[in-house]
Image (cartoon, rainbow, N blue to C red; front, side):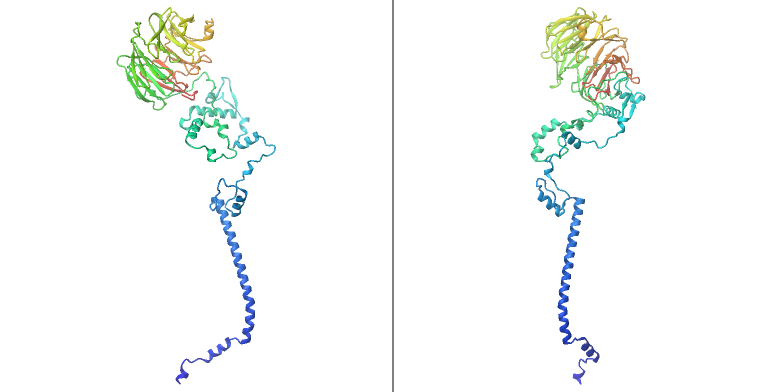
Length: 555
């Protein structure tokens, strides 16, 4: 009973097992069919895997191409200097870059292509307006465009010329700064000394940009592109602007008797009756004071740089004068001159070669002093009293005038007078001035008349002046040509605002100078900067007025 009752199995389960178990013949048939189906399944699986691998490879290639297109060759970057056809083809097949360098192209010459065509292809304007040449502008009709004229009767100009003159006007009003200008010579020297050149390093300019620096030096600055150095100054109205006073940091307590620019155009000397000589660095904005010298026993009547810029000669109504060495910052008191009894050496002129100082002496004597030894080396004697001097011919000749109304020409090598003639309409000569090139000279008198002569014609016997200026009504005390002899300044210290600027080519006076809204007070001295860009006026109120002339691009 117990044996039967343990683990009983139902009849239904037994029947089910019998139904599920295959017979021996069925098993043999299924085994034969199964071998064939397994081989086909394995083939299909292999094919599917191969297709999946191919799809994955293609997807990877597409992804790499897309990444290289967007971000460059990130998997195999290009190495310069190892370019060849095989390497380039391998790189192209890998899909790491979309281009390769073909060095052989530069060695090929296309038939029928000249050097001019190559240059035109290399440097071509991005955009050109065809309407510029067809358009004409009347610059004489509109008041604000008249300043663009080069000739007085000019009216219609082309559109391209109009654009170039506007650019030139802009560069005059807004000159470039020195630190932004490229000096190719200095730059090339420093690179050659300190570092290897580009050719030694293997760096070569790309095709189309080779020799650009040599061919396009005009693009180095913003001025030479449109501004020409030989542009003439126009008469009528003078373009200028008022700047900060040159001595704004330390005005003088007495009249200013001398102002002069150093030859570097940045240093300005101002001296007067307050017995101080001040030096200012001129930039038109701050005009910083650099140094001041106090002379206890000499109110300054005149102070002047030597043309070489090394010393300053300072004189007053005294028997002696001072010499200030700019390099050593040392001042020396010189005089009285041996053998002379002059009580005043307040008026003098320095030769352009910095070798001689000519002082006005008593009874028509002219005292010649060496700048090296500061000793008297000779004298010249006029018939009348001497009142004004001017050097010519690089210091080899000297002009003088005075109480007899005549103009003397002296040869300083022989110390003789080789020409003497009467200044037309002059009774007492008070001022002389020669142009920088020595072709012209101006003579002023105590009646306010200024005669301008051609020097060669005057020496040849022609006594008639080429122009007589009658705009001053009081004694002419001072005259000065600017650096290119296109402007002549004439001044009288006896009347307010009695300072005129003359356009020398046309011999006409500028109508807008002196400024209507500015009081020049009693002008006593004037000087132009070496480049012509600045003009400064010293007056009896102790101020040094500073103006910028827009025609000149450099100080």
